[in-house]
Length: 472
Image (cartoon, rainbow, N blue to C red; front, side, top):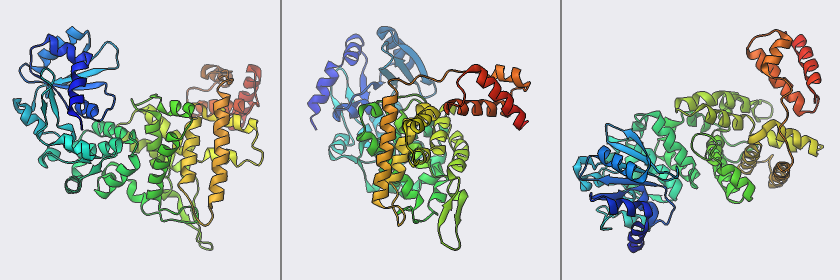
C-alpha cells in the first residue's frame, strides 16, 4: 500500500492544509479519514487530535478560522464538531486519551482505525500495523480490554466487515463471542447508528451471519430465535432465518444490477440519516417476523401455513424498532415494507394485468412502490421448493419487472391525487370528532379515489355520508 499517496493527499487537502498552515499546534489526522485515503475512498469527515491545547479552545479557533459551525458532541470526553460552510464536510476534534497520541492509538477498536498522521510533517504513526491489515483486508483487534471499555466496538467489528468486506481474524471472533452479552450495555441510540451503518454496507448479509456466529445478533434482535425455529418447507429451501438473510443479499444484488432511476431512488436519504437501501435491507431482514406467531401445520397435508403473517409482522415491528430508538419515520417506512412485501406479487398475479391494475398499485403505494417491488423480487429469489420451481420464480420476476418498468415510466406523467375532502370537512359532514373512525373514513375515501370510484368533491361528500351511515 503506497503511503506516499497518503502523504500527498494530506498535503494537497485544502482543509488540512489551511489548518496546518495557520496553526502551530501538533495535530494528527486519525482513524477513518486515514483509512479511507489509503483505501482510495471518498471522505467528508475528518477526525483530528490536538495534543498541545485544550480541544474545546482549539476547536473554537478552527471554527472561527474556517467559518464553520461549532457543535459540542461530548463535553465530558472533550469531543467537538465543526460543520464547514458547504454543510457536507465536517471535522471532529478531541484531545488524545491519556494526553498521549501513543496511548490514544492503543485504546482504539481495530488496527485499521489506529493509524495517525501528523498533518504538518506527514509523518505516519502506525504502531499496530494497521496499514498491513488494510493491505491484507483483515480486521484485527488491538487490545481485548478495549472492547470491555466500550462494548459498542463489538458491533463496529461487523459494521466494518459489512462496509469493507474484510475478513475477521479468529482472535477478534473469539473476543466477540467472549463478550457478546456486553452489547446490551451501550445506549440504544449508539446501537441504532452502528446498525444502520452495517445495513448500509455492501456485505450486510455476511456481517449478519458473523454476528449470529458470535451470539450477538439475538441480543439486538430477539426475534431471531423465533426465525430459527421455522424449518424449510414446500415453498422455501432455507429455514426462515437463512431465508431472511438471503433476502437481504438479494436486495443488495438487485440494487447493484438496477437501472439508474432505481439506484437513485434507493440512494435517497429520506429519513434516519441513511439511504432507503439501508432501511430496505433491514426491512428485508425483518419481513417475515410475523410468521412464527401465525405458524400452523395442516394435519392432513403437512403443509406449513402463515396466514396474514404480513399483518402480524407489521404490528410487531414498531415495538422492536422503538426499543432500538429508531425514529417514527424510519419505523413507518419499515412497517410499510413488511406489511406490503407480498402486495406486488399479488398485483402481478392478476389474471388481467393491465395498466389500470398497475396504476392502482402505484397510487396506493406512492413513494414506497418501487421499494416494495424490490423486496418482493428479493423474497421470491430467496425461495425455492417442491411447489416453487425456478420457472415459477422466473415468471414472477418477469412480471414484477414489468410492474417496476411501468412505475418508472408513469413518473413522467403521473400527478398527485387532489385532496377532495380534508379531516375538518369530514367532521363537518358527519359530526364526528378526531378519532380512529375519522382515520378509517379518510382511508376509505382515499381507496375509493385510487380506484377511480370518485373523482369530484361532490362525489366525495356523497361517499362519506353513505359510508358513515353504514358504519356508525
